[in-house]
Image 1: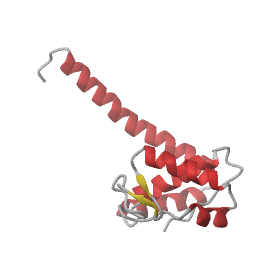
Image 2 (image 1 turned 90 degrees about the vertical axis):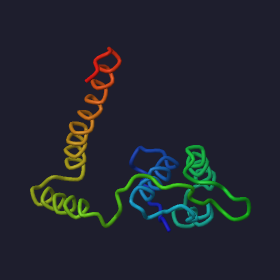
Image 3 (image 1 turned 180 degrees about the vertical axis):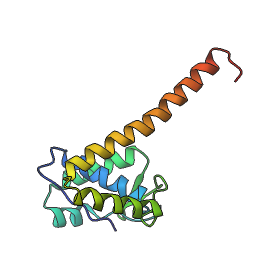
Image 4 (image 1 turned 180 degrees about the horizontal axis):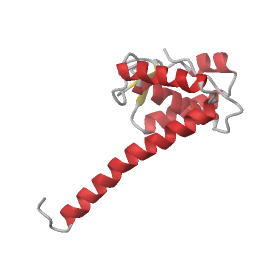
Length: 143
């Protein structure tokens, strides 16, 4: 079961936080197809937010095909995302690295900025390579 944590000072809309946290749980394998999301009432009791906010988040997840509402039963996961399970060896390496970053005096925002820069470097390069690959093929190059 996912437990939502709402950061009222983040500047991110509450329903978006619920959507993001649900997607993260789907990516981490904490939610699997067939699992039931907490009811709107349960989320409201745990987070003290408006029930319409929870319903808005669940509608967004349903629109994206990630969950489905079953009348009278609740909202259930339809499909998972990604393959980054919670117990992957990469997570252990990342935790060790985050510990080193904290020991080095970096705060959360510093780490997030550094991590995002590295992600952009690696994954943007892949996207650029894919674009180049597509451009080459679209110009008739057989390679």
